[in-house]
Image (cartoon, rainbow, N blue to C red; front, top):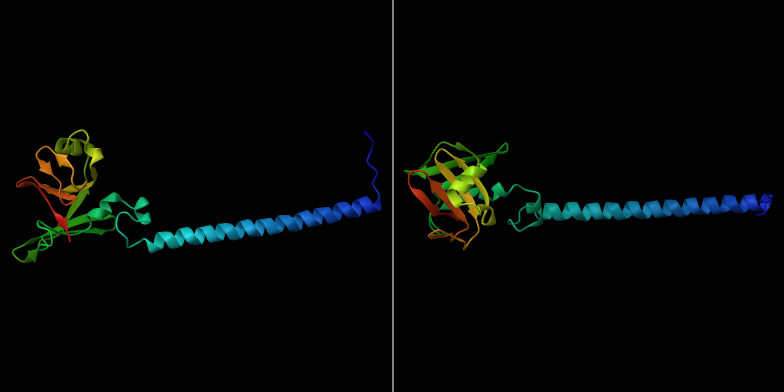
Length: 172
């Protein structure tokens, strides 16, 4: 191996090459930065544009499945509103229409796993995606068309009342 000979020409070429590489790196960094800015813009735009979409939208990946239970419900498809579920400060509340007046809001809490098993059986995770309960009432998002025991879920939503039993409810 021969020792390197440093001449002024070799040094100037090396400096030019380093400078060229740095410029090249800067261009590459600018290109990467622009790509990431573009990717971030597309991601944010997609998420915000899907904000008002149904549960099949892109935003639902990041949202709480219980948020599908927010809304107005009836015992018949296209019927009169009889139940309202709202969300305030991360908590869910229900109000029922009784005698033409809405009842006071009462809080609904998460359904415990053992309660899901008591109500829907061991394989509940295959057809129940969300549930909230309180004061003897439970509202559940279920797989439409699924049959459990002697009941077929026709609407995709199910209400269970400790006094009256269970029934399909329809989101309006």
